[in-house]
Length: 292
Image (cartoon, rainbow, N blue to C red; front, side):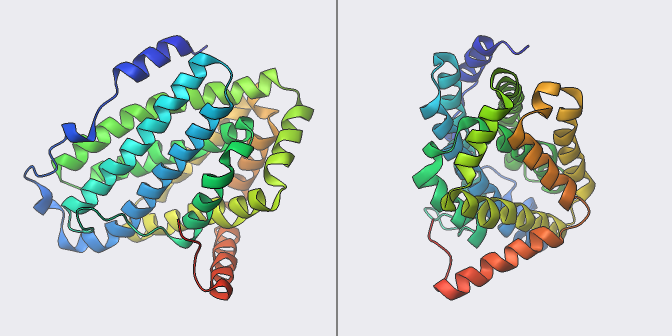
């Protein structure tokens, strides 16, 4: 059982500042020219995934009644905002962005962020508790490890050493909350909160044309970079394996939805690709993606 008071103490004690890292230190030239064009969309997606996670954790904080959990989610929101800024500064260091620029979000993440910034507080935390662990498992289990393997810049290693330590705490809390909602709430209550959260047009829009296509676009970026997608598959299997080991998690309807989607698309990206195409067609009719 996770000791959440100890986790809060650790989360507060291990806070760090982006300004602690010298982004002008030697080593930027170790990123090969041929890597820069391939890394740019990958880093942009990573930046916006962190921004989305910050919004989600802040929404979970706002709905939380337990003061310890509330403080933990506040620290996690700060973590994610800091991760995004550190990754933006790496992009500036590598010449991908101007000093005060932000990367342009892809159309899918723009849709997702547009909805969440307005409506995340209306989505029940039990739904986020099922979505966040899968995202962070992929982030921690594949993306971060990949970057530190292929990029020789020591400042990149320094940034993602900090990011990885934060994500390890996040994942521990993610699993705890997923089990908590599966155990403490009835299946009927969890189902009601899931339906109420995503059956509204905004919720369905964010899931089908924001979140799921974002995963597909990120997978395509990884493929272009030459990452071994087995790492991503292993991270997803770790998520689906949670329900096999823990009956409280297995009965959580939002977890079953996410786990079923993973089983559906693993080794077959046709569904995700179709959602991306539909999303892009929608943008074409509207004249462009929703601004983030």
